[in-house]
Length: 407
Ligand SMILES: [Zn+2]
Image (tube, rainbow, N blue to C red; front, side):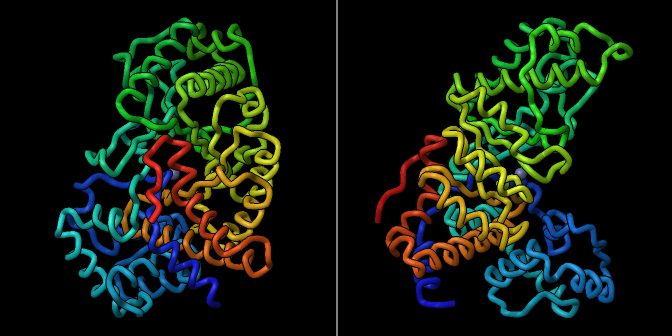
């Protein structure tokens, strides 16, 4: 690494950050929290490698996960937080684990990492276990409201992948049989959530269904509400869900709430961002934030960004899914879009992993912006502006949070 890389990294490390996406756990979760709990509640667990508590089991586990980028950044975070250069091993496992456990004996430790070490001045919280919640820390967390459940309100007996149904949460399980009435019911809840402090809507529907939302008629959407379990077809359900999704986009525009949409990954099949082309095109006043840059279909986001003014790519999760994919994407995003578009979020459940995700995006920014300076694409000062835009200014403008104080 050269001087420009370190110069940029030092600069970025001194700047405040707005983290646009987090699932940070509530305070009570961090009582009795150790290395095993951390790993089990991290993306490393998504690698599907069983974590056994014997020395041999730990060695086997580490041998399999140690080059995966989820693990690499989490390990860097632990080394930085606990002042150690040593990589994790079966030999030092218990030492690391008791350091983590002891640190969390201070009940403020997990929030202090976010506020001080990560320098987050605001974190947008997607508490899917209680949509719209701020974990009791409104100074740090601004809630977003997850809308998945509204696509399942055609019956009180179906739930979204988080186990939520709007009729059971907000209507005492009472069925609504008229589509207009259903849309007003939904709109009222969204308006209430905005009043309660939600700064955006969030769709994680890529975990429930495909993203091919097509415009449909009210009559077709009504069928899913009129039918019963035996006569309701998959087509009726799709029409209902597509209609509701389009209505959510309209409501988002009317209430000026940016709409964060998970693209790529999820159920994988049918989740690439290009499938949202129609809904993005037909709702030009809705701000669509495309999460995870549709990984692994990064090109979809660049195409949509080039064509539509209402598209906002968000790098959240990407630098820890694949650091080099995030680097590749950032080169193109700078060139294809305008400087007010790209944001970043950690997308993690714990402070340790959040800090790892921040280390990853800082590395990506210093590396990519540094090489664009060297290539003569822009100046070192421009590179600093781009970094501030991605880590702070763009989110402050998009979600109407406080602007950055220039030092
Ligand atoms: Zn997420």
